[in-house]
Length: 229
Length: 193
Image (cartoon, rainbow over all chains, first blue to last red; front, top):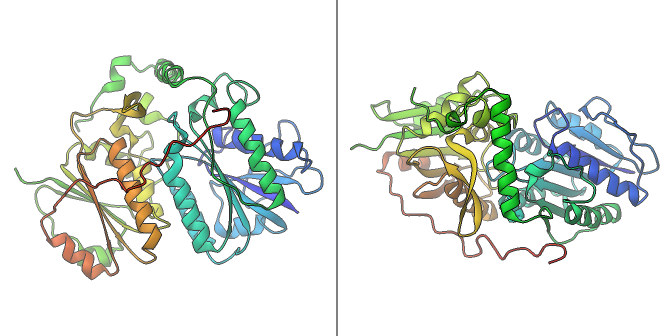
């Protein structure tokens, strides 16, 4: 029996949540859960998910366009459900809220795990979203497994790959999470932040905003403008 | 000066007609239904069309409205301790109200304000399963207050729409919402710390 990893981002491209989902799948692979085809494309549910080979494979699917029946269909034969999601205004993206409401009472008893990443440096900025997920598990009668909260999510889609610096701490915690997923066990909340100090992250973020404005042909002073009309 | 109030709600048409105040100058009603397009996480509201969401639907009108009101009343079903999907879809599209840049406040990272002032927020949740969910909602309100630099916010819950309607008829009173006793909790220990 495998694991279903749902990318909770509304993006249908290789965003941070999708990359984190792949990194988790890699950690599961290292624990001999399954192997991941290189460059495999995640698919939106409920059409066939990106199936991984090997016994007890993990599957990774998008949540945008995924209906509650579609999620339930994809969960058939799975031993655990994992959400990998971005923090949206201190909580969950809206489409995930609807999806979670849609599966209430339909998949009871399944172990549930999550990875949440936010753009702030501090991992504990995800704590309210963690509570929302725990409330969901309680109401849905799922077995609360574990959550990994990551701060500094803006670094995930930067020049760095997810292996090694600056994500050594993240990979360590992903390994712990993967072990508990494999065992169907629960564990304490996990936290990770990038392997460089906050001021470096802030500098990198600001440079990134200016770079994106430049690519969009937006004048730097217009980044600060106020909307009157 | 009379309070300029913006009401964001997920009530049905019939419930909104029954519960919400009559139209008047200084009052803006913003229904969350029908649900707007999802935030795509593209940051276009920061680096492409600063201040406004790039998606061309009514969801892009909400962020600029925040700057034009003194009080925002959010009426939402309480769902797992947060907002309903339709209300959250609007809120997700409103981060253009703040700037992408970061600043430190008490050593923690927050976004910089775009406008000189922010509205106060009051949250009217309705539905069931208040218990722990309501405590989560208070923490969510506190987090949003910090991120939107709101001067104050309050959270109330109502088992029936009749009670909610009665609350809406009263003059808003906004004591600052004190953070819960365990907010934001001890700094978690990180690997290698």
